[in-house]
Image (tube, rainbow, N blue to C red; front, side):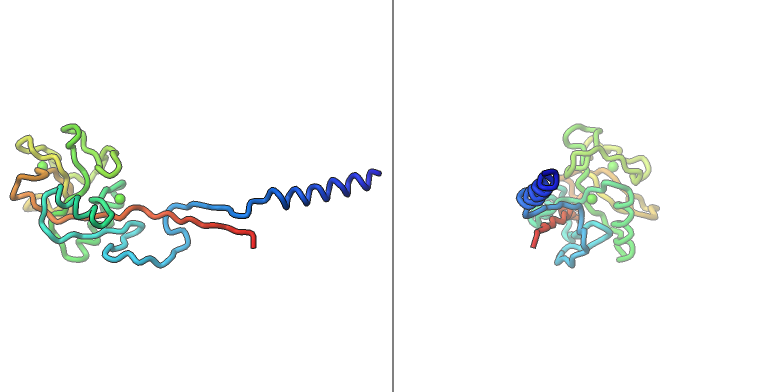
Amino acid sequence: MLKLTVLLLTLLGIAKTGWTREKFTIQVNDGNAFGAILKADPFTKINDGYYYFGTESLNWYEAYEKCRELDAELVTFETDQEFDAVTDFLTTNGSQQMYWTSGNDLGKTGTHRWFTSGQRISSLRWARNQPDNAGQKEHCIHLGYIYANSKKFELNDRPCSEDGNSLFKYICEAPGLETISIVVWK
Ligand SMILES: [Ca+2]
Ligand SMILES: [Ca+2]
């Protein structure tokens, strides 16, 4: 009787396993988890990010619109390591131009945030004495060789628009990647 009970329970167990298993399991990972070869044109891969270097000289709003046309946004530097990687790329390619980023203090003067994330800018890459909101009209952040004696790319605030001396190139950053895998019982 005991043997029969055990057998029945075992069979029940097997049947239960069979009936309750999920046919599909979906897993989501950050990034390009399996190193798939991606077509990213016109974006350039730098570390884990994809960037587009716009060559027209535009005000901040126009630059943002250009990035949106590419389903991207003006660049946000979540870390100074990202800033260094992108500016190293520019340096390697011989550029010392000015480029808009997504950073601004349009929401509240003096509180600088990355526009794509809303996060406060905590970068250590500001140029000396910047941001200074010169003339009380500098609310958008760009990178470049800010002073005549600058030796590297740094951040500075400039007028977002209505200023002929603040028409800059721009860097768009593509949205992040996610890998979705579906595991199936065959
Ligand atoms: Ca970024
Ligand atoms: Ca400034």
